[in-house]
Image 1 (tube, rainbow, N blue to C red):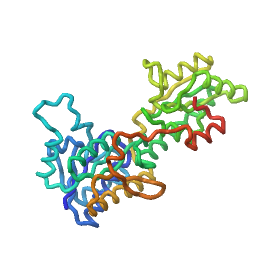
Image 2 (tube, helix red, strand yellow; image 1 turned 90 degrees about the horizontal axis):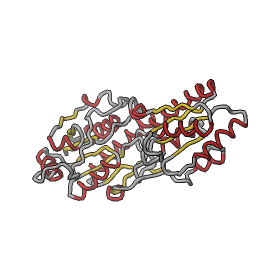
Image 3 (cartoon, one colour; image 1 turned 90 degrees about the vertical axis):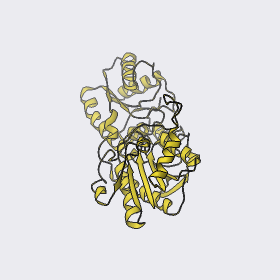
Image 4 (cartoon, rainbow, N blue to C red; image 1 turned 180 degrees about the horizontal axis):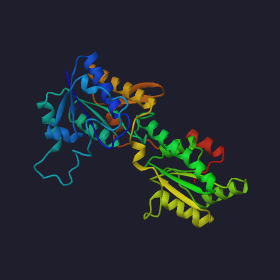
Length: 336
């Protein structure tokens, strides 16, 4: 068999480890030929591919980013496309011309939706979920999430000393447009006093009350962790808005820190390396068994898979019943 593999959407720690897991399993265990497809779905439009060998997979396990490169090309999006260009049909044609028996798609929610559409067209597809946001439906965790939480937690740990020394309120903004998983996990792991998530509405007076009550209890500083997607006035980004409102409401010196792309870069944690390796290996196993149109999942401690059609268009969001939210509230953490 000849398989193709591509990475689409934003970069994420663990992509290269997943590529390695897929390709080494395919080459060594199943005797498959592997084509690396450059720049996501754009590479299938341009037929921009390379043959992967065991040698070309060396050094990938701990390497950040993606050796295949990525793009945000969405072949089913009609906007700006000439009427005579049918990108999905062209990609399907190029897959046939390249002799690819199955395409492995590594990507986030948009990639899963695109993969599901190709599967519905009859293209042999297996996908692996990739996102630091951990918002892909159907899997307990995606590789990249543990790394992002580790980086964010380390940053919060470091802000504690500055906040304590200057008796300030420190607001740290982490990634998460629609889902607050990074803010929740890093905020709880880093001892945040206020944690604001896109899924849970907040009131500024509740935040003020939490901070002022801490001062009354002899705690002159506070750590506020916010996800980038929380509701603001629409003119200021999350950390800036919350910091300025806290200072206005309390009169306390308040500073903001935005982690940004630092959360997405660099080497994956050991957990993410092993998760990537397991998911990549299972993807190749599905191909060998002819089980197409599926996304790899982690459920509990088991690697499995579900139909792509069940995943497409859904988001996994934090709920107020999540045990970390419940336990945080019991411990006096303000969620807004």
